[in-house]
Image (cartoon, rainbow, N blue to C red):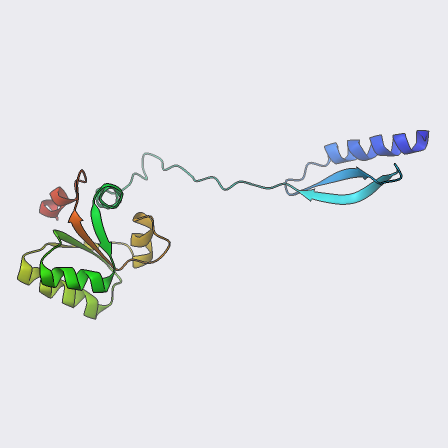
Amino acid sequence: MAKEGKEEEEAMQAAEESDTDTQAQAVVEGSEGEAKEGVKKRKVRKVVRRRKTKKEKEKPLTAAIRLAVENGEVGFGARKGTRSSLLGKAKLFVVASNAPGKVRDEVSRYAAASGIPVITFEGSSIELGSVCGKPFPVSVLSVYDPKSSPIMELIGSK
C-alpha cells in the first residue's frame, strides 16, 4: 500500500514537471484500486482570431461590403448578377478580380446599358466570399439596397 502511494505521488510530480504543450501524463485508478500509468490526455487548443494592428486596418471597400451584406439587401452569384443587370434592379455590382472573363464582360455590358456602376474587388472570389461571411467563393455581388453602408460613396472615389 505504501509503495503504491509513493509511486502515485512520483507519477504526479513527473507529470507536473513535464512541461509539454500537447500531451500530459495522467494517473488513472483501476477497478481494483491500483494505479495505472501511461494514459495520455491531449490538451485542446482553442482557435484564436488575431486582431489586426493599426497598420493592418481593413480597407474601406471591404468594410463597406461587409456592412452592405449585414444590413442591406444583396444577391450572390454570376447568374443572379446578370439577371438583375438585365432588369436594372441592382444599384451596384462588385465583381471579383478573378471572375471569368465571360461573366465579367456580360455583367459590365448589361450594367453599362442600365447605368449601374461596377466595382472590381481587388481580391479573389474566395476572399470576396469570406468578406461577405460566406463559406463559398462569390464572383459577383449585386447590391439592391445598401441601407447604412457607405458603399455608394465609394463609387465616386473609384
